[in-house]
Amino acid sequence: MAAATGSPSSQPWWSSRWFKICLSLVLLAVLLYKTDMSELSHAVAKANPWWVLIATVGYVASQVVSCFRWTMLARALGFNEPWGHFFGPYFTGMYMNLFAPSTVAGDIGRALFIGGQKRKALAFTTVLADRGLGFIVLSWIGAIAILAQPGYRLPRLLYYAAWIIPPATLLGWMFGPPLAVRLFAPGNRWRELVEHDLAPYWRDVRLLSLTSLVALVFHSMQIITQVFLAWALGIQTPAAFFFIFIPVVNIAGMLPISFSGIGIREYGYMYFLAKIGVARHTAVALGLLASAVVLVAGLTGGLVFLLWKAPIPTPPVEDVKPATP
Image 1 (cartoon, rainbow, N blue to C red):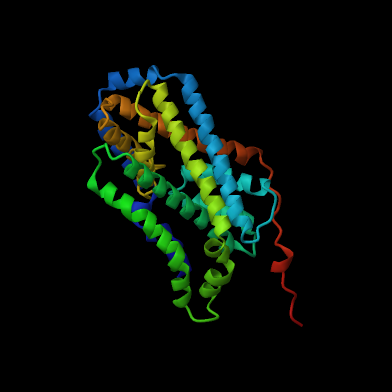
Image 2: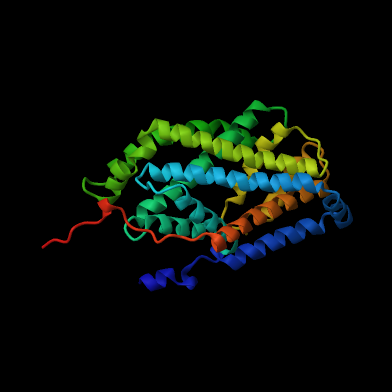
């Protein structure tokens, strides 16, 4: 049964690597077909390489900040290894995500490393918490930016979401874990996981405040790198507008239907930038540069993978139980 479950044939067709690659290629092909290629090539060729370089360095630096956030979340659950113990798996996971069907492969890889043989489930929980917190903070950034800048003609759905997301996530944090505990009987492993092992994630207000602040810095850095890329192309638009559409596009790119968000990102940039008068070919050029920066950042994880010497993880003393006579 287990073998059948893990076989490639049992996976949904839309989650396969080849479907995602093909979808990204189709989206790009349609987009490029409807775009003046000579103008697009001219826009990319005129891009200021220094701003592109600054954006790339800033994007990689933002990943270092993200790694620091994951370290904070992991240490709250008892993973007290040095910071370098998390740096290697994090960037190696970025590299793995370039070639895996989704970000799950890289996440599983870094969880397995820090968890060793004894705490794999708990380690994977730190990765889920890292992803979840980042998603919530990104949603808040977009929601606040949408409500604070009402002058743009955005779809009504975005305004509804902007009003709903902040209170919904706050209520979910306050009442979600206690309700989850009540679903399981006392002594159930899942109840113990939520009630005891994961208690810092819903009881430690200081931890959540600090990690949310770090997530805010991380996402702000990533959004600012897109502003730098816009400057590289000569796009003169209010930087505050990027805090509206970049979160929306990034959230759409998280859907497990494309390869690293390629195709979806370019369409999103074209749609939103058209609302402020940016030409189609320029918007597509910005999307292509953004995708290139994401790929280059992932390749830096490959350098870490090649150069970083991973120590053999050893389980902590408290995980080793004495044999019963």
